[in-house]
Length: 341
Image (cartoon, rainbow, N blue to C red; front, side, top):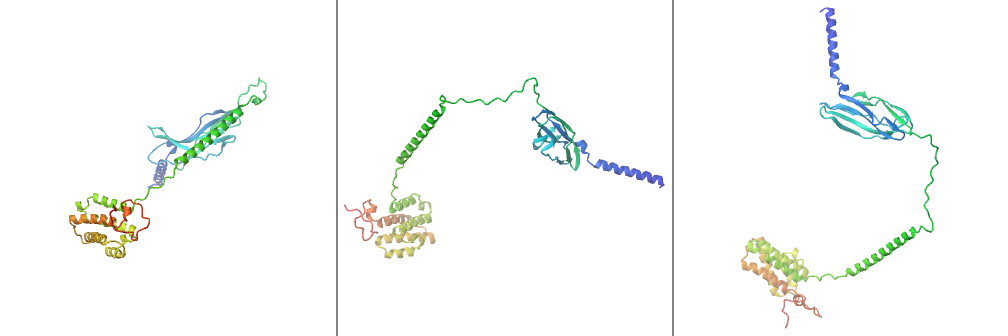
């Protein structure tokens, strides 16, 4: 290869590399454009207008990152920023997918003149673009110089004197309202005291009545008739154990059957009631632990024995609603006795 051919090849290669680099760099001038506009370019002293700055861009496949310029308290000298606003993004052209990311800055000026607003610099994907410069004109308020300067008007005087008696009326109204409110509160308090009568609490249900009621509820469930023998026997004996604890102060709910029967040896309870208690507890143990299926008459017997045990260990005056005796009986757990005629 001659020297001229080498020079031509090197030049062509350089042109190719430059072209690749040129087309490889995104051309943001084609996709992004800086925006800067005034809603009103001519205002009067103290009037307000919006300065809107931002970037208009066409959305493509690659994301676009935009960095807005910092907004200070003044745009230029004598042009003050009242509200820096928030950054907002909106779709301007749905067909071409053109978006605008803008910030609306509220500005004003208190001195007349022309103010040049310099371009704003934006960073778009590491590239820098600038907006156009703007001109804000601030005019003074027109004054009619043909008229003489007038003095400041004096404040209007409110007539006061003997004829102005409105304060007396308001004083009487306020006093009347206070008196009526006080009378109403006193009336409400007295009425409330009358309504809140101290009603004595209802007398407690006697122990034997609550236990007998629980036994009747167990009977109404028809448990053993539906094959629930264990549950039937357990509910009856648990009710009787609760009765024994409250009547005799014996911890029957925590004791075994043998311990309960042993405790009753020293209690002044008739033998018939002890035998009924024994039948109930032993049959319940056989059903619960030996899985014995009791006969129908045995289930009925457990219920009847429970009823008679409660009645047989309840003082007679409680059973028949009589007044307590003047002299308490020697045996408070006397067996069931019908009232004497």
